[in-house]
Image 1 (cartoon, rainbow, N blue to C red):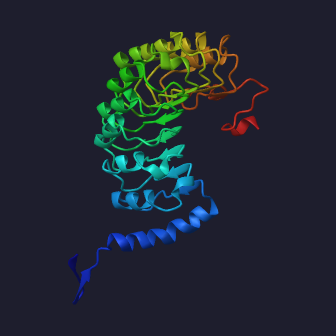
Image 2 (image 1 turned 180 degrees about the vertical axis):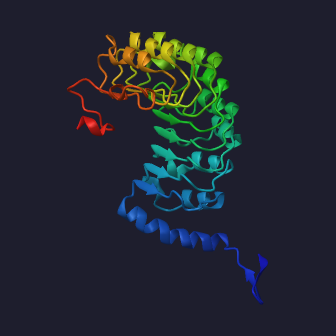
Image 3 (image 1 turned 120 degrees about the horizontal axis):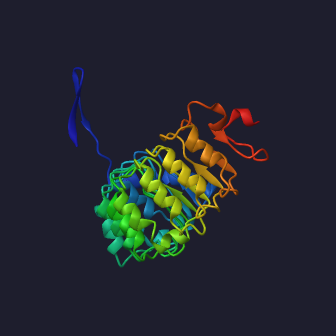
Amino acid sequence: MGIIRGGDSEYEEHEPSFEEKSAEWQKILQPLLEEDPCLLKLSGKYISNDDVKIICDYQTIEKVRVLDLADNQISDEALPILFESEKLGKLEELYLGINFLIGEGLTEIACSSQIKLENLKKLVISDNRLTDASVADFIRSKNFPNLESLDVGWNEVGNETAKALADETSFSGLKTLILERSYIEIEGLQEMVQGDLMDQLQELNISANKLKDEAVQMIATTPKWKSLKILRLSQNMFGDPGAKALGESTSLSGLTHLYAGRNYFGNQGAQAIHESKTLTSLQTLVLKEGVEEDVGLVNYSRPELLRPDDPNSI
């Protein structure tokens, strides 16, 4: 509590007590959970760590399967509260993007023996300030055996995380991995793509990682993509050699969606993908902004496959 001066008057700033906050949250949570007891969307509510404690202790929170806490003011101290909550044991999806997470809390839950979110299938912790080491600790953890989708993009993710992905992990069911706008270099990528985890991935987003031709050639020739359907390589730095490697890849023959816009290749590289004899399963191919000279190659699909983002294809 402090003194606030406004104009010619003074008044005391009132900091709500824990009981008062709990009463306010009762008014917010009750109608939301009555409407849908399995879904709780609380993004953009200025939620703090104290608020997280109240939410986790709420009487009917046990039925929630999807909890959205994105775009708030949650820091590392709240992660053990969430992940060790008895009442959130049935949670399957947790969204914590755009918060104040740095990494200490992530390392703590990775090592904790009190984790209750063992049924968690999807975790989004993108757009925080998570360190490379903390994300690597999480990936090496054995606490999340049912995780199917992990988004750690827009953090300080780099080679240590990439190398952790190459190690044996508990993520035996991981299908979607998002590493967008990270700092993975050729050294880390080389180890990552050789890991057994790559065999089971269905979607990999490694956009905006400054990947050059050598890195994309490595991805294109790695015989690990047995299940991969969606590959996102937009906003990197590869040119015609990398694009040609993609067009000639037999390892990526199962792809149904390939996103490669905002790179440095031109018509020659685009043509290699456009006329690929191996990428025959593609339903969506985005080369937008990768080709400036030939509008016909900006967005491509075979005649029978219309492109959702190409107004000329309708």
